[in-house]
Length: 99
Image 1 (cartoon, rainbow, N blue to C red):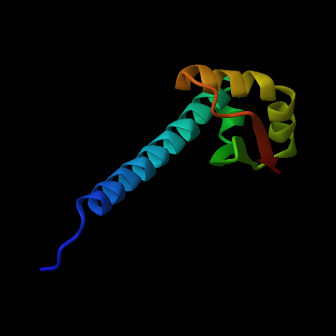
Image 2 (cartoon, rainbow, N blue to C red):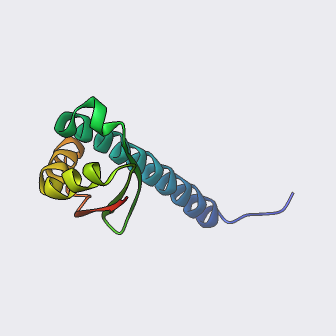
């Protein structure tokens, strides 16, 4: 068994926890986005939109129809506000939608 410095072990543990925290937060953002879409668009239209990922504070949503993409574009500020309120901090700045 080889000697591993304590600092290296602690650094690796902290890095792993940080990555896990980021993954949990990203999944929460996607869940809150789904809820916000249902609240805003209704269940039928929200069915055609799927939050995919968050990158550089921009949430990407896939839209099956252009009507849903238009609704998301028109209500972007409200959707972003709802997500950030549920998170308790400002993590999402904008929405990118793929139609």
